[in-house]
Length: 102
Image (cartoon, rainbow, N blue to C red; front, side, top):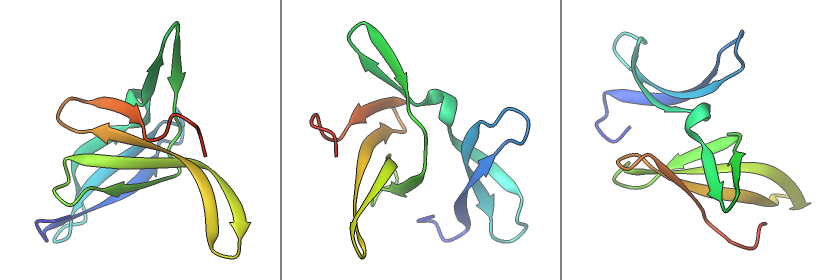
């Protein structure tokens, strides 16, 4: 993380299968915060609510937003196509990065 005292990682609960992005302390290795739960990732589409799975994530420079990626599709060697979403940590809202899919 930007503060140099923490790092983040995925964690999947073995019983509920819910995925989390957790913040850990470097010094102790203990969890210091739950940054995001997969249950919060609901994309509001008119007349529908779509749950989004997390396969990868990246923070914005100021760590106020998280880009969530899923549905990877290899194109050639190191190139991929995927679905990307932006999660705003302050407003706790999810947006589609592209209206046209991959």
